[in-house]
Image (tube, rainbow, N blue to C red; front, top):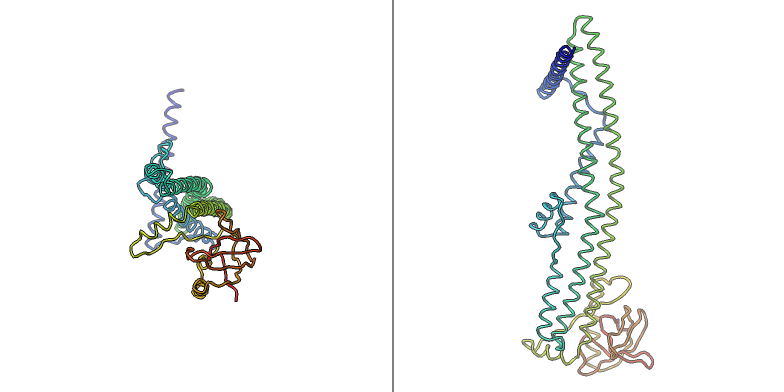
Length: 373
């Protein structure tokens, strides 16, 4: 009985291998004849074809978006390769300082060397601390983008789309079987052969229709993928907005700290420049929404008005463009849209005027003002 069972199993396996070989040969012949134009090919319906094209486009653009986002988050290709290898080896990527943090540490070290008590040394330390804050914000932005944006895109490519490819390939196999059965039916002459061919055609047609339906359902699921990727895109934009807003606020705070340094230090720096050219730190407006570039600097006409005011030592009314918080007791805080009186004081920096509001008086930056006629 054991010997018989063994021979029966071997015989079954041989027959199965022979059947598989015959099926493979039939598919190969059908495929070759289609390529040579010697056999008809069952075309997929237009809706299914459109779904296949959309899936391919989704895959191609997802790959491109991922690649460019990775370049944005990590411009160094060597570091990207290293992170890729660590990911494949399932090991933790070693923590390293980014460029902002490296610059910040260098500034702090140089400031400590010059002496925190000196104006220049103190300024270097403050700049270094701000650069490290920006580096920390950048690190949070990269981590958030990788988790909420890149990971879902990668999951689609390595999960859903691979499943689509698998079912699409199976659909192609079922189509070849269907067309091969149609060809055999056309060639059949004897009644028994035609009956067998017709039965095979019905079976292959049923399998093809079933596989086409499975493939269609998977391809229609790409719409859900688009909706998911849209949410991921919103998360990416929100993370980017937060990152740039943090950087902007860090730089505004740093600018205020540098602007509060003694004016004699700034004058010494200006006098040491070649040709007597002065260097002043531009003031960036602090408001609920970021001002446009044109708002950061007076127009040519406005500059002419300020120059005329300084040369005449007169008094003018001015409208405040943005809120401004005084960085020292010598400055005057401002509220957007209020009207104040401004005048020029001999020896004052060209970027500032003396402002008055009732019995309050202090320096105000001209970039926050619009002179009134």
